Amino acid sequence: MTGEILVAFNSLNQVHRVRRKLMADGLYLDLVRVPKSTGLPGCGYGVRLSRDELAPVRAVAESFGIVIAGSFIARSGDWTPL
Amino acid sequence: MIYLDHAATSWPKPPNVLHAIIAAMAEGGGNPGRSGHALSLRASEIIYECREAVAQLFGVSDPLRIVFTANATEALNLAIKGTLMPGDHAVYSSMEHNAVWRPLKAMEARGVTLTMVEAAPDGIVPPERVAAALRPNTRLVALTHASNVNGAINDITAVGAILRAHDALFLVDAAQTAGSLPIDARAMAIDMLAFPGHKGLLGPQGTGGLYIRPGLDLVPLKHGGTGSLSHLAEMPAITPDRYESGTPNTPGLAGLKAGIDTVMERGVEAIRDAERTHIARLRTALSNIPGVTLHGPENAALCAGIVALTASGHDPEDLASELAATYSIACRAGLICAPLAHTTLGTNGILRLSVGAATTEDEITAVTAALRTILF
Image (cartoon, rainbow over all chains, first blue to last red; front, top):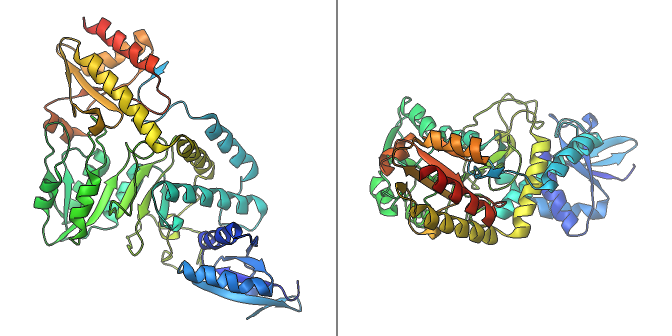
């Protein structure tokens, strides 16, 4: 898991919108529940990805006007804000 | 059975709709947006896929602007009660269903003023009458795309063009046209579009929704859990979450997606052409029966898949009962939940024959023959 990135959104619907667009572009990302260890409040969902996939995720979210709730990197079994 | 009650709900549903519902319960039986396990995540995907399908059908670029509701009535209530405030003015037509009229009257009791635009005797609402009813404080114009009583189609594009130059929001009730008439929300300048899932879209009952154009914020009709921003006391500002409290109808929306797939495969224009042909045939054949009066546009091109008729000396309810009992023909009679329309049409109840994607020429021939036998 170390080095893996988690991009969290405020709504599962927003995750789907971004994820489906990326899938259409050939990038398949795992849909996940955001763990409490990120410190994000509420019940968030997000996608897990590698560092080089971060830019397209951010670009697609921005193009849709969707605000990313938080981006995290896995370090020593914990999620650290990017 | 010969089913001519598609304006109430379409039947039979395509086989893929039934299969999709069962598959959703088997493979996506979790509660969407509430957990992180596979069943829950799959359920949320099923719903999003339906959102995409609806958006594509109505020319909407952002699927998140599609809000799912239990039916068109709930969608209309959300649109009306979510936009009108005391002191606002709203415009509606004499052909509106109770799903529009009753919530508007409820808002009138809370300080909203109303103007009813009288439709022409054939049920079509002249756009210039809508324009004449507008006031500086008009917040909402609510108009049916096609009457549920006689199928009269309103020129939504013309009304939308009028409202582009006005601050009023345009709410369209597509209960009788979603899936059977082309609808492009953006091109028609529609701010809110209410649709049922179980009529022309061929999905199951218990499905429907409201398109809300980007930038438009409504007061939610319901408050509760959304599976998002759960630590807040207020409803999330995010659409569709803001308007979709509570566990959604995942199996129903799976069926609705399959229904829309069927509509898209066949093509809305092709479905429309078939229905128009049926209506033209029905009108021609029924108008030759002595004592029968047809209530609606003479030109089938101006009519959705509905024929409304009365027969001298016969109560419409009795006719519907006899058609069902003797000929196994299913249709509807009465006020059809739109009492204002009967003042416009000069009726006190009608017999409604409504066709759908599954209607055949033989069925049109059979109902015509049955009515001729009953009425001669």
